[in-house]
Length: 230
Image 1 (spheres, helix red, strand yellow):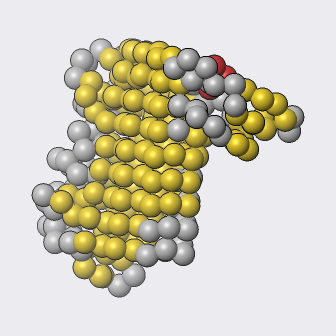
Image 2 (tube, rainbow, N blue to C red; image 1 turned 135 degrees about the vertical axis):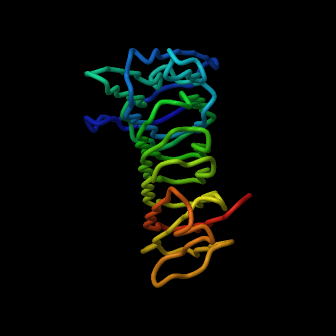
């Protein structure tokens, strides 16, 4: 049984039921660039590339056992720009018991896009290594998050991470310049394969590569690991 408080402040009960799976394919609709906005309150998010069909933007699979948590999916195109929003219904969890809630999202690898993600409680893996990302804005909640920023970069990427309560692991390329600014927080910061440069950390490729990843991290309560990988 789940006890939830919704936005109106009313206390109500929602029972878990059979596990359901719903799959969606979102067509690109002629957009040349896309803003992706994800809002998950409690669950597990897996995000990666994998869509190579030029006419499709995303393939999503949602797994859940609380009917009220079926996410809303909205996609609109204005001119050459698309905007995809996927959102869990707004609820504040008071007590959880045996719920299951998972999003598996695969995105088009060729379309330039921005990614804005807000997470609540849970474990998430965000792999943008194969995506044509121009910016990433991540707000962590309670749990563990892994963000993979490796991959071939031909343009600069701005990444902003706001820590919550938990652990964040950020995988970084060794052949693309990275400058990471880390501030605040009550946990430890590990920067494997990076050197201090004033108040920031840089990798060996910083200042040498065509593109640069500018990483801005504001820590929360928990650890942050920056890891340069091959």
